[in-house]
Amino acid sequence: MPTCESWKPALYRDSDECREMSHLDDILFVERSAFGQDTEAELTRKLLNDPSAKPLLSLLAFKDDKAVGHILFTKARLTETPKTASIAILAPLAIVPDYQKQGIGGKLIERGLQILSKSGIDLVFVLGHPEYYPRHGFQPAGRLGFKPPYPIPEKHADAWMVQALRSEVIGSVGGKVICADVLNKPEYWRE
Ligand SMILES: CC(C)(COP(=O)(O)OP(=O)(O)OC[C@H]1O[C@@H](n2cnc3c(N)ncnc32)[C@H](O)[C@@H]1OP(=O)(O)O)[C@@H](O)C(=O)NCCC(=O)NCCS
Image (tube, rainbow, N blue to C red; front, side, top):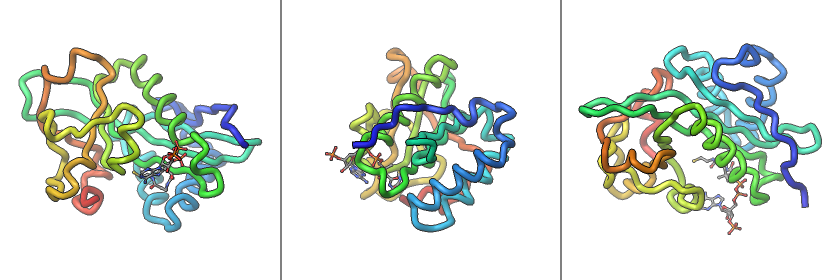
């Protein structure tokens, strides 16, 4: 079974590598393959060039020199809170279909969270599959006092999730999450 042995941080917190077309091509290929459409690839391309999304963390997973997975974390901020925290949003996560269900998505999440933790990020948010992300430590964010950038329909409320990278943060902060400008459109928050 293929494993994801080599981790190549293609783009790391504003690195100049962000401008290397080979990496951008790999990222867009992975996003298009995983989602079967252009929407997420286009969103990713715009986010990589959005100053309000930085610093960002973008990791590609390779198998035998082929890009098979990509994860992006972008900067966000908390408002409506007396006490602030350093936060990021995970979006998108994409694995090429032939390489799904081999643990690559999980490894990208874990590697990303490790790097963000070392970078001083306190909380990571995601709007995604509520059966998938809790496997990697995420929990519903609404009931912990974190509002998404746009209201999410009640039946999908648990898709808005958070993970604390510092134990003392949950319970001591809350508020509304403001995301990067490119992501700050209602159509990205309908789930
Ligand atoms: C969702 C996705 C990122 C998961 O990545 P992956 O590398 O296939 O996942 P992993 O190998 O780490 O984990 C596989 C496990 O998660 C489960 N899983 C995968 N997608 C899931 C989903 N949407 N909902 C619930 N469980 C899911 C698999 O069934 C598998 O379970 P098992 O271990 O019991 O067999 C990948 O399938 C993908 O790119 N999908 C298309 C794009 C997408 O939906 N991205 C996420 C947007 S929130």
